[in-house]
Image (tube, rainbow, N blue to C red; front, side, top):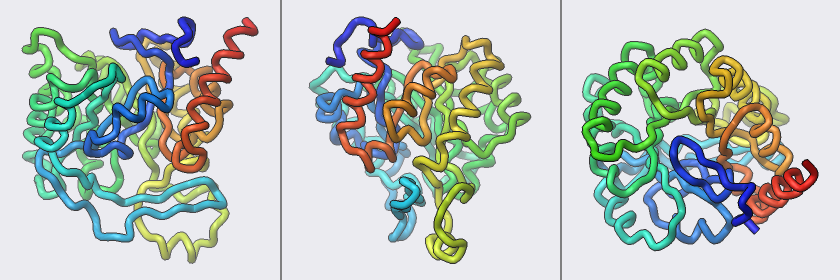
Length: 304
């Protein structure tokens, strides 16, 4: 069903069998990407991968807000590290497209952060199809500072410099926070243009606690973390629409945030996204969600 010709998308030079992928944070250690392909996913973003393995934040660090179809997490880039991811990627059996989501170790100070990203980029390069630079996770102290204009420009220029030295450079994308205001998004788009990045992943989790039906006391008890799921849906679409209009639809956008139904996926694509990624929707709805999105896109196509 997912092999239909009209579902194919050629985005930043890669051929996707359909526009549906799994967002980073699920297959953190590149353990199940081959299996995920059989659920209908056209691509999986592994990671976030950091140079060294790290335990992440203390548990409990993942909370379901079932009434709101949302999740709050403060995992903190827990992963087994670069060497472990590479060893599993070497055993890749399927043709599923793999994105490498890269970050810095929590213990790495920001003035050394770029070295972490460069190391991840170089070591993962032979094994992934595209890269996502993650500077927008709210669960790593000081990480958001890497979104500041100068720091971001330096980091992305450095990655692209390494990329250009390769025989076949790979697409590089930037994952942004939904908490940026439009002026900050404008600055980010200028940097993307300047560094000739291939696309943008919009959006990461939010620190906002709007649109929740739980009491302030219950939310405070959970504490810090990034909120994902249904409450993020409208903000995510708003950001996608804004970016698409600002760039006249020329910058490929991977939409993520609040895709809980097939209709939500369609809304993102109609707002200007080229591809969509699910995470919280996959947790709540299970693999059936992927089939429903693909079916919806199929029937929409047939009506035209």
